[in-house]
Length: 227
Image 1 (tube, rainbow, N blue to C red):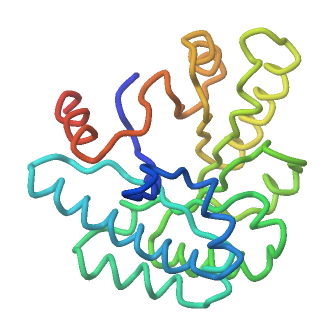
Image 2: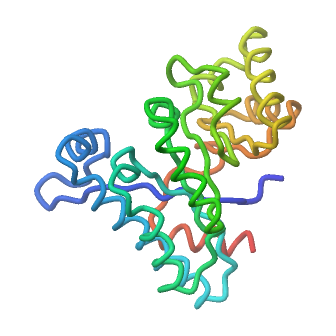
Image 3: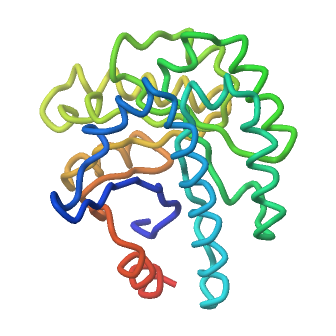
């Protein structure tokens, strides 16, 4: 429809001496030294705070997706932390969409599967991110106990020019939807790509064709225009 259906929270590091630093420059370090769990918890709370602010402005908040790292699952506190935040801010668990990368799930499907089951019981929605970014397997579609799948930009890039790419992507979308997953295509930058995905009956699309990452105040203006 072209109307906003969901948002994704992205983290940026603002340094007075260097300006905005993109996550690719600091997230690998945070993953190695364990700080990523503190950063994730900060982002989760910030999202809940923003959702509460939207309600005060009279806007109907969109569901927002946030990342969960592999270390969050191993810490053992991810479920209780997220539940505590829903109570603190009076938000429904469904207002948050929790993203795990396909590689995170495939490394330890048993441990992460148990945590996902607990999060499901508490009402949260889970999605697998970056499907198709590496050596994706049908096993992920078959076994990952998630509600949504985000298809990586690399599977979307060539669908406007390559029949082979369209066949592969169409097959992935149909398989995921048949077993009950909602499918999101990432990295949509051209109208032609969006048209192809619409014909494939892809549920949702995300990309610069619709919006680049926005600061909070510009995001609120976008929602106000589309309300």
